[in-house]
Image (cartoon, rainbow, N blue to C red):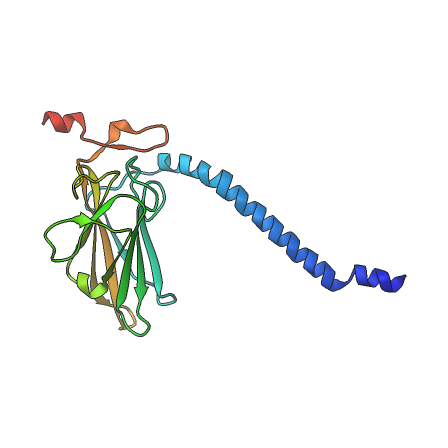
Length: 214
């Protein structure tokens, strides 16, 4: 009888049950966050934020502890939350991938909403594919521009956020040459109508009446 109980209540069985319980609790916690907390945060967060302004800049240096960095522009979430009804979350995402032994980077650009782009030294914008690629040396001292909105008409947008990306080298405190990426809000056309803010804290594109009268 004692042998049977020892088999049933063995330390290995207790450990296995503990691991299964931890997995189940973690799964329930993730489900609660994804289905309840995340939607609630999406509804309340915009009311606590201000929309970006033209000229805002965001400087990124990829940490040496990793070789990949993600930068996104979206409606509510992301490094640049536009708070604009015409923009989707993760509307455009930039993945900076560092070379193994150098300060060379591949820049992968993925879009989940309508977007057009103008690579460095190009004169005109063109419709983006679902995924595009640039190399870091292409934007040293040059700017790649991206426009995002809810629709494209003949490779053009009548209202949009324009995001710029450029890079330059600098020497850090350890005397090591590193690359700095700069994202900027180049243009918001024709602007955001601050009087149109809805209950979710989102804005529509548009000019204010005072601007139109001027």
